[in-house]
Length: 73
Image (cartoon, rainbow, N blue to C red; front, side, top):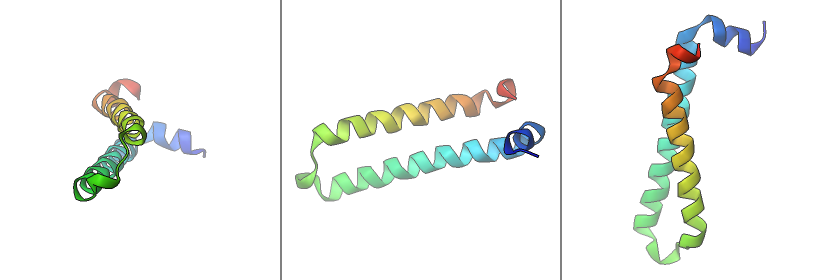
């Protein structure tokens, strides 16, 4: 059995995977914001702006998938 077939048969497993992805993105975002708050003189915004943009887009895309998970199954 392939992993894709296992995910198609068990919707709870897919929900758990998407929820863990969202939580990982939130942890990354939280750690980076805390790092910025404690060491703001070492942060270069030309580096962080694309990082925050990518994290935000990835988080939003997974939240959309999570909210419409029944439709995608």
